[in-house]
Image (cartoon, rainbow, N blue to C red; front, side, top):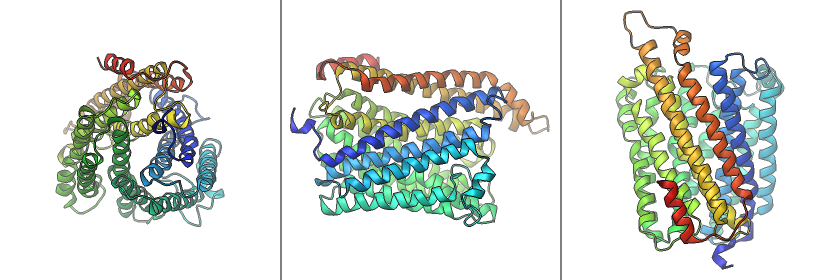
Length: 478
């Protein structure tokens, strides 16, 4: 086994528990998504054991936490390799893993087992009120724990970068991670004025997913593409600069598309519309970036599954975050569509395409090396993984299409008629049942794809062969 097929530094192995726990939480997120999907159709499904609001809290919180575990695992793997030094403190990484894992698990159990008002009371929310806001439902004590974990994590990877080589990938990755931590601090700011509350709430939610997270996405994708294509680092770095420049320019002012209808000044209407309309540009650049690197590759890497994930990430991120975001981002359109199932369609494909898939990309690349399998998993394991890729990705496309259709009908029945003849919200929902059933079926297939993906880790076989895997990937793409 060559040196390039083994871990460059032993401390990179601390990424493994982060990746494994992220995947476990991912599975939990999908299960609760299916529960919610059924509750859209059968309103009292699992009531009162798991009310809809609780299922939704668990679903969205698991999404955020598993992606954070994935980002941390990615950082612990790629930052030492880019810096060309051992991780500053593997022990600290392990301690923070257990602190974060235990805190996250207890929080989810709290959602499921304790009434939310009681949970707020027993966790000291009255001392520093932060609970009750969408995506930020975590008890205040959990939020404090997240800050402590983030500080320890940034210290660990920051010291690693300071001791070693400073590359563009590491600088971009660290900028994204620091920005992630700083933006989360606004979760503690809870003004009584509802407009101000929503204004700064988006500084966490939007400036994460359409701001600093895009830097993390770009850094991880650049790292994997350098490894699997052999393209000159200078070429990859130039593309990375273009992507992050476009992402920050459009994403920061593009926050304005959330300010259309919450009581903010009218100048956010043109600002939000114009800069949001430009937000697909960094994702389109990402597609060009990935395909250009792969088409000009200097070597054939045996891990063709990782190559497929990298290509899929760029395409699905562009479709979900770019195209579906643009569909309803202009204020004259958003006037009718905001808060509809069109928003849900955009959210599902964007989160899967941009962030779930990039975490799965780095896992696909790194886990065979961490597990001592060489540069790639065996051929049969990779083919199984590709089946999981296609089942999940195609299912997500159909989930998005079904939710988009539901949103169009919802707007048509509930919001377009100006004569007062519009249907009520609940009557409109009854008309959407066919789309919700279709979405649920697609969700079940997504879960099957995830289970197939999990199974790929246990498939044995002959060592990866580049020619055979290229042929398998080509057949999978037909």
